Image: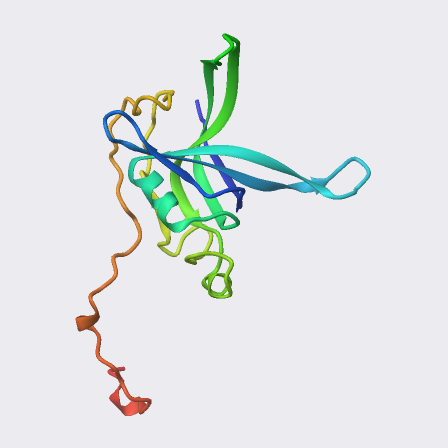
Length: 175
C-alpha cells in the first residue's frame, strides 16, 4: 500500500507549536493550495485549505522558520483522524502528517520580505524531516507510536572563523 502526499502552498496562519504530556513537540498548521485547473466554466482556480501536523524536530523547525504567508512544501502521508466533540458527536478530519518540510520561497523572495528564510522548493538542502518515518494515527494528547529515526538534513552553518576575506583581485583565488 502507498500513502504519500506532497503539497505546496502558503501558510494560512502562523504554525501552532504545542507539547504532549511527555514533552514531545507537535506543530499544527494549514496550507492554502491552488488547484491546477479552473472551474467548469474555465474561470478562476479554486483553493484547498489543507490541515497539516508535524511532530518532534520537524514541528519545531516549522514553528521556528515559517510564518503566515510563507511558501511551504510538505511531504508526508494523509491521515484520517476520528474524535468525539464536546457535544458527544463523532467527528472525522483529514490531515497531512509531515515527514519532510521544505522552503518553497526562493532566497530572493525572502529578502524582499515574503518569508523569514529562503531556499529552493524540493531541495538545495533547505529541508527538515524524518526521512521515512511511519506513524500510527496520533491524537494530539499522545506521541506517535514509532520512534523518530530521522534527523536534520540541512547543512550546518560553519563557524565564521573558518572563512577569510579575499580582495577583489583574482590572483588570490586558489583556482
